[in-house]
Structure formats: structure tokens, C-alpha cells
Length: 528
Image (cartoon, rainbow, N blue to C red; front, side, top):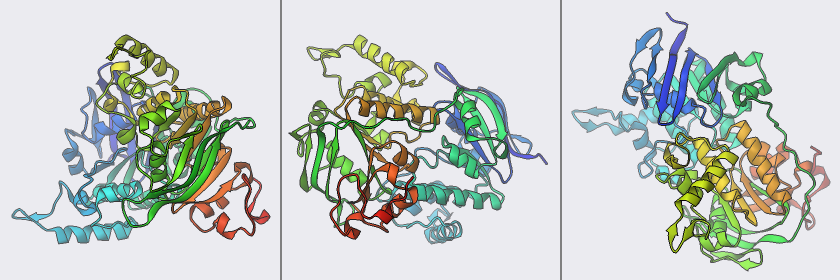
């Protein structure tokens, strides 16, 4: 019997204008976690989509247990016990958790659905692997972390033995990431084999046995994790040394750009408010980070701030203008840029071209239109400039459909568009989600450059490394309230985690009023 449970030998896959996979060979051993690492657009997801039957390669073969197999579609993949959790989940939002898990593999007798049997199996699987879900909840009402559990249960329900995880931690909180790593280890103990696409080097070092590195569609090599380092992997991935530490000088504060007073936002899911009486300021020349575990009101607050949702109380002032009830375009014209949390729902029109998406919030400006007619030449030149400046990779350049681009390059397009507006206030929500280390380094430099140019930056992040290294001030939100304010130089990750989990509340526990950039008591500060 072959040493490898899956072999992808000399795979080549082309799209118009680009060779996504150029003679790639990948071999997966039984019971291992095999990481697939590469820059945005390096061809990782394409290679896994070939294995799952979503794409057909131009050349190359696939073997399972030493025997050549043909995988024409995902049903063929499932028949070979191959399952995949996609970067952007394939779930029906108006269906329940249970209905999504069994969709396409419904147990039936003479055409009659045996749902009780399916429910029993799903509950047994969720208990066995610690993937606790509510089978009757609607997908649209649960968190992205819970949605990922549903995707994993879909694979387990189909008895898949080869599990493909495409950027599984891009939408998870630190706690959920730890849980997923433990789940993956448990899978391999049972003999399951995992292909793990990620940009996060820490995760590869923590959970993977081997790692295959791609760069611009070409194979750079496969290494044993125990014999390598993060620095070596990053060099293989981007072809140069990557700076992991964020370099920034002292801040030089200017006038108040954003003034939030007593903002309250109602919840769409329950009677309680999602955001409760939140007040803070962001000044020119500083980066303020709103940190917290997902589901604690950050999303609802940002939606109210940017005009996507209404608030029930409070006021928001931008550069001295009351924008509490202003339209989104008005906020944009007054100097607000917004890198949204959900790039598909709020960041891009997926069926528009890249160049159209890059001028979505500026097409009415004189440089792009005249007498109501868009100047296509000006739009093309502007798009080409941003594509080069931000290294946005796509098969057909400015005319590439946004939907066909990799998730990381979609994100880079949004970041380019929003920063190039030269805003007074940049609201950056998870700006590095799904990006490789080289792109993360670049985006962090852009955020610091905005701050050094005298702009105000409000960063919303779940990434603890980002929370600790990028901002000048950290505000922790828990259950819709600001429960702590910190200087990142004077707080530890452990201390921050206690506030994010609700175990501590600076304002509840303080014996005296707090000043900006302070913490409640001396014993709560651990020099970092």
C-alpha cells in the first residue's frame, strides 16, 4: 500500500491570463496535518478545488492510496471520502443548522426523509468532537465561528477521512482558533488526514507536521515543520525577509476627529441592546483599536458609525460635523473611509470588474466623470495605479471580475480603495483578515503611515498580535460596553484577555475615576 493517502502529481491549472497551478506535486500522508502555505493568489485554493472536483486540471493526475482516481465534481470527492471547508462558507442562510449539514446526503426510505435519524447522528458527532451546535438554529442567526462548526460537521456527517480546511481561522476569535487546533489534532489521532490552507505561520508551527509552500503558482518545496522556522517559511513564501514587528514612532496628537457620545444600538436578535451607551474619541495622529471577542457589539457599533444601521440613542461627530443621521455618501465626503468586516456583503460588488470596484465611492468625482458620463480611460489608469501600488493580483488586471479573485486580493482591493481616498478617519475592521504575512506587513505600514500623516485610525480587530502591536490605545468591548482602556505598552495579552472575556471591568472595579490611557489599579498593569 502507498505511503500516501492522497497524491496530486504534476497538477497544472490555467485560467484566462494566469497559470494558477504550474506543475504542482503534493503528497499527503495518513494521519498528518499537512499545511499549504503561500501568498494571496499563489494558487492554494485552486489546487484544493482541483482535489475537491470544483476544477478540472489541464494536466496531472490524482492518486488515492496509490490508485489513480478521477474527480469530476464534489460528489466524486465525497465518494472518495474527501471533504472541504471553504474559505467562504457554502451554507444556505435561511435553512437550519441540521438542514445544511444533511443537504445533499439526506437519509430517506422510499423518498421519505428520516430527519430524526439524521438529527441523532449530528448530535452524536457534535458531542464526540466538541462541536456543539443548535440543530434548529437558522444559519443567518449564528456567529461565523458557529457556521464553521456546521461546515466541519457536514464533512463528518459524510464520513470524510481526508479533510480540507481552506483558511479555517480567518474568521475565528483567538479562543475559537485554539478550539479548532485541538479538534484537528483529535482528527489525526483517529487516522484522518488534513490539508490545512493558511497564511498564519504560528498556526502552522503549532499544529502541522509538514508544509508545502507555493509562490505565484509554482512549488517552492515541502518541509518538515520540526526542522524549520517561521522566518524560513516566510522567505520561501514571499521570497524575502518579512518584518514581523510593527515599527512606529511616538504619536503626535492633533484635534479630535471622531467624537462618539452615548451611542446605543438595538439588537436585531433579541430585546437587549447590542451597543450600550458607548463614548470615546479618536484624535488626529493616533490609532485606536476596538478589541473584543466576536459577538460583543463591535459589528453593530461599526455599522452605526458608518451609516449601515441606525442607532437608538447618542451622537457621532466627524471633524466637527454631526453625522448621527447622515447618509453613507455624506460620511464618505466628510472624510470617512471604511474597510468592512464582510468584504463580500459590504466591500465589493462581486460581479463588477476590479476597476469598477476601485472607484465605487469616487466615480462621481470630476476626475472620473463628465456631464454624468464615466471617463473609462481615467478609471482604467487609476485602477492600474492602485493594482501596482498594492500588488493586487488578478488574471486579467483591471477588467477581472471581483468574484474570480482570491479572498486576499479582494481584501487588498478594498484596502487600496479606502486608503487612497486620503480620509480624515479610516475605520479598518479586520483589515488583514485572510492576508499573507507580506501583505499584513504592508497593510500595517499603511495604517501607521495614515497615523503619521495626521489622520485618525479606528482599528477593529480580533487578532491579539495585531491588537498589541499596531494601535496607540486599546478599548475593550464586552457585551456592548467599553470595559477597559489600555496603553498596549503597559498591558499583557493575559490581562487583555480577562477584560475581553468579561472577567474584569475597569470602570466597575475602579476605586476612582480613570484618566485617558490609564488602567484602574497599579497591580493590574504588568509591564510588557
